[in-house]
Image (cartoon, rainbow, N blue to C red; front, side):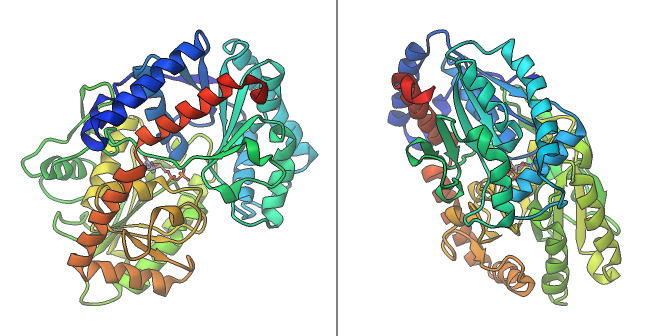
Length: 480
Ligand code: UDP
């Protein structure tokens, strides 16, 4: 287990976005919470420090809570490859897909529990009686019983799930049930994700949010965007007159120096080439092969249309808890190589550098902002932060009507939903409908930005978590 350090930051800048009164109210709430907490700490425990929605959300939560004097820490579990193969299998199961189809029986439970015991030893050295510990996702669910025995106040925060029960969903929950059924507070991204055996009174629903000031979402001039994309090798030509710089979380200046590993025929797209962009982990549920084929056969094949696809994700081996990444990237690469040359040349595959997360975030920011259309063709989706990120950047988004994406987009108003995520024709038509109508694209993008401003910025999460933790502290009998 290791700790992730996050610099403290003030919530004051939120005033310009959501008004001074809300910031003052949150400061007051934080002061009361500090008082209630006394010497207690709030721990978050998850399974990766980078490269996915959970890490993306934890960073601002810690940053701003620390900025208000709340003692909060972030720990990441470690374990053998076998652990993460099992937890990926569980992750897939809760989305009702079989993944590698391997068993989730007593042998897997033994391996899982052994890894949890090892991580619990490290936790024991840090957690004190009465501390609050928020365990994220199936990867850390097995820590819950131990933490409860130790007298911690425990929350299980599950970011994934499926609306209906099914063979795989049931298999996943049967594995996890004994670890989480007695947790005092369980938090889901959608109400429908909670299994019915978890008491409703102890279940909360919190929608994920984004940090508008992070390297991922901060405003960026066209010059900086162009320079960053050139530096990363994602567009061709000189970087214009800007510098490839961004602001780091600690307020210092960062510069993009690394190149993405790019696969394309010939040079990368020119600056003025319309781009259709999907940014995701290399995960089958993000349907990267479907994105490639849908774009090739239903968008790029129209002779008159000038647009290229950028399908981007993290460097293959960079996401600690996602062992399927290299295999999925291999499948995408093979399909790309087998495309007819005329279609292949309109598609660029990019593995974005991950050595410096904020540099990676600045590249994603520039790519999303530069996109003419952002797509998220997921087959399943817990929530889909990439959708929120693109909407914040006033991009028209075309996305599958699955999971949490349905809570984010009002079809035709602030984005476009494709109702059957496997319908390539509908997907291609939806993209073309936006590419071919710039006025509509602009309207969708403007409405999308307003929607995120209204309820999907991290100040909302801070308010909600403050209320939740306060509830646990003032009614501790409910929480142990
Ligand atoms: N992401 C990133 N770099 C990449 C690919 C993805 O920073 O190369 C980020 C992306 O911007 C988003 C998160 O990873 O913030 C993915 O969250 P989402 O909820 O969309 O999906 P998850 O990966 O959690 O299933």
